[in-house]
Amino acid sequence: MNQINRVAIVGGTHGNEFTGAYLIQKFAQFPDLITRQSFETVTLLANPNAFVAGRRYVEKDLNRCFLKQDLQDPTLNSYEELQAKSIQHTLVSNREQQADFILDLHSSTANMGLTIILVNSHPLNLKLAAYLSQINPLVRVYRCSFKSIEENPFVNSLCELGFAIEVGPIAQGLLNARLFQQTEELVYAILNYLEQFNQNGIPSTNETLILYDHLSVVDYPKQPDGKIFGMIHPELQDKDYQALNPGYPMFITFEDKTIYYEGASTVWPIFINEAAYYEKGIAMCFTQRQQINI
Amino acid sequence: MNQINRVAIVGGTHGNEFTGAYLIQKFAQFPDLITRQSFETVTLLANPNAFVAGRRYVEKDLNRCFLKQDLQDPTLNSYEELQAKSIQHTLVSNREQQADFILDLHSSTANMGLTIILVNSHPLNLKLAAYLSQINPLVRVYRCSFKSIEENPFVNSLCELGFAIEVGPIAQGLLNARLFQQTEELVYAILNYLEQFNQNGIPSTNETLILYDHLSVVDYPKQPDGKIFGMIHPELQDKDYQALNPGYPMFITFEDKTIYYEGASTVWPIFINEAAYYEKGIAMCFTQRQQINI
Image (cartoon, rainbow over all chains, first blue to last red; front, side, top):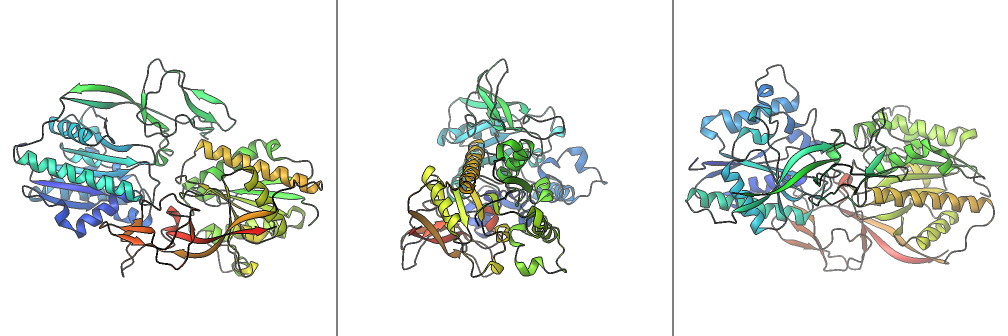
């Protein structure tokens, strides 16, 4: 890839994540903000029905509908499954409008700061992530790799270049002005970087990058009937990206008993207390912090 | 009222306000926690279908279904309208199980602290509110009076004694351990106070109470087509119960222009940026702060 011709900015993939959805509407109204000389920028409100309803999705989580086999399966026809196929057509299949870089804007109730979610280790994605984390200390880089692109169910599986941005903490269904503006600035920084890339002049950055690599997910404490009996411990709440050492508090039960982290080694939890993950059985994701050379 | 015989604790009136819903489940599992010698305590998960769905409501906001005329209207038969009638039957019509005091547990994405929402000025409600605000500095007292009980659409219209509790800030669809515990402590303080009332020994309190009286609601800045074009200003975000003076920033538009408060006198906004109120056209509620003698 020597030249990026088209960048797609996607928002409202989850209809109750307003930051991205309203940014998309702003960019659509004022396209000059995202226009750069060397490439075209398009915007996409990915799940309009869910956005109108103020819900994450109508029938099925859209950001789990992009498995290659599902996109090719003609029997899948829920609203979001059809929407995923339509998005694939718009951003991939139609050669004349094909996106070379996809930025998918999300928000989280967890204290994610400005997180970049890498789904592969393409050198340009890594360099861009390093650049962004260098110019803004709120930026964190989480890598959630898949064995193959076929196993990646996210919007970002459609394109090798690009990533999702996950900002927080913010409740679902509302706008926070400061986070809106920080996300907007991050989008501009990314577009400016890609503009420089096209002009053979990407900014020099540190040669190292702090990456948080996905390890595993952890569920809430549950009774045999599936009912939750504990919450994120107050000492862990909002501590995303901080070291969780063996013996540290992790949950507190409704009866005030503390449940400790009993793993053998330090982990770095993220997505702590994400509202949308209660139904997925995820209280947090464990990651491994590492510094890599790029 | 010389004797309170039955107290009803209601939670999950809004299905995505987990603090109350899970407290109800805890109390139902461990009834000793809410048992007091001089009265019976019952619990009610008010909107079980919405709780299972993780949504505020299924068809209609349950906490707007308690207008007297609606409860008597046999043509109203949405899930929540039927649920309201069923709750009225359980807590009011059935003389043998009639509740003398109703506590309805809510949560908010706004920085409401531990707010008591009075819907009338019954002396016992005022005294109890004064007591609670005296023992816990996080307690605030908001009074949203109705011209007549017939015009009150809330669960608390069913009973002269009692009030709603609105805790926050907390996102919808999740549990925050600290807020869960603070709400639980507040419930126990209320039950203990009522127990003392029955035994003719209510604690002496300050003879004054700071009340925030409802004035009006304020909508987001909107285009003629109804689309929002601004957000709560960062300087107003989380400033619930703080004085908003003429000329102070109130909103910031998506184009970074500040909209100032242009009223003639100071107000005290609450419910600032409550997610559930976007669809109701409410960005915040203005209140008037006053000190009253009780």
